Image: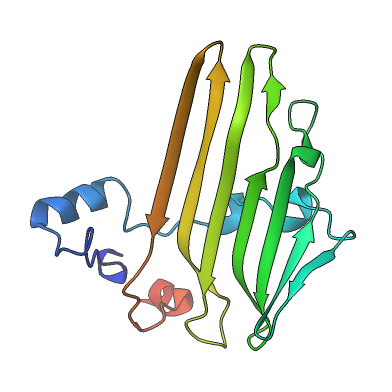
Length: 170
């Protein structure tokens, strides 16, 4: 299992043995199932598709957010999906807040957003996520609290596919 994943770099620099061990201890080398990721149909209304931009190489769709309950005002968010015409593959998903809203009476959500970019490494396979950016800000009374997060994947290298059937037979 340890040979299936390798830490190539951290912020463009070669990792030290301590960095590699820390990465393994935190589970960086373990594959994560996508089964826990919510389905797209549960997040957006696939029946109300609108074309926002139709360019030569890409088309951008807007899909309204599904109602997430009383505390999630779907109309306050915009979800845009950028699709490559040539590859017929997802390039980017952007969800951004249109206007602020209150949660629980005292908390005012003033900013929230998510950006997810994909790259097609091999047209025979689904695009892979290469960037995840998320952030937001709330105001509690007179105090504003903001947080953001960014993760990127780079330096993809072709490897031999892992065959579960062969591994269990050994």
